[in-house]
Image (cartoon, rainbow, N blue to C red; front, side, top):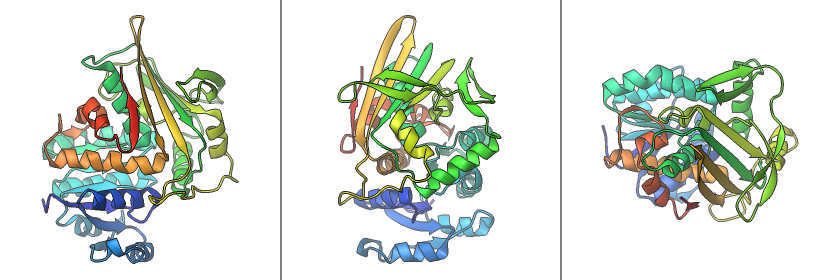
Length: 346
């Protein structure tokens, strides 16, 4: 293991990767810039004065030696390069060879399932931590659910409603979505009866969800299944996990005419706002946790970097493959995000 302040970022020049690099620098870490496209990587490294002098190490997922070189001297790696169906396994394998923790921002359901299934034992044997979906989708919802439950480890139902003001997807989001649809042959997926179910046809329906202020009662797409159906049941006994998406945001995502996100502030964030409303029901009791903020891609950076900081400083609860809620003390983690996310817990 190298310097505890050196963190490799695979996919550093991508939309989310840039936010992650900026967050690492702001918090005193030293990023190693890595990615598959040497030209884009060099262009990014030359784009801002604060990146001058940082190590730049191109690597490809079909060349393990290049990934080993990219991680040399790093204390951890954050994978921001989708589609994660292609990148997660090779980068995790490189992290395990280096015996350093791995964090990614994958929203791909199938890629996250693969990570839990394939790497739980190897990561445990290596005595290191692999945290998939440590991002807006998967990570934030899991932390909110875990914090809402408190000391409990089970519930009858979990509902996660995403109140996005809009959704201007990145090219990476579109590619990852296409890969996921191809992997499940166009079938829909949901988590019910304690397991993932795949079915034909279109299960999504327009429903009404009573969000907290300022959204109030709004139209959502039901069974708009996101990575929470992997992260939450990975460590909590919950037979039903449903996720919902604001109808307008779902329409944005579905349209090929929707442009990519555009920066509106000095941090590079878009004007998009979000409200994540988590409802946990058990035995007739209901608990609610809410998170509000700006730009789902930008907020993935403090989530991933906070995770790395906690791993490297020994503030974790397990080794192996673990979701955010299993790896960290959820309420404390959410409190550490106060500069980026406003959170209300029961």
